[in-house]
Amino acid sequence: MDLKVNQIVESCYTNADGAVLYDALASAVDANRMVTLDFSGVPQVTSSFVNSSLFALFDRYGDDILPAKGTDCRC
Image (cartoon, rainbow, N blue to C red; front, side, top):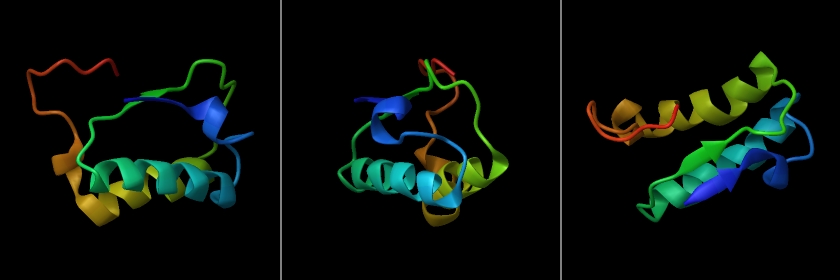
C-alpha cells in the first residue's frame, strides 16, 4: 500500500499534521498491511511532524514494523 503524504496532510509542519499521518499509518499497521510512504511533492518536513508521526509510530510498535534487512525497501 503506497501512501502519498501530500494527499493525507496539507503540510508537514505541525504536531497536528503528524498526528494525521500517524493515524493513517497506525491503521495500516493494525491491519497488518505493508506501507510505502511517498514524500514526493513534499518540499520540507519539520522535526515536530516527524516526532508526531514516525517516531510516535516506533514508540507504539517498535522497530519491528520496519522491513527486515535484505528485503526491498525503497527508502
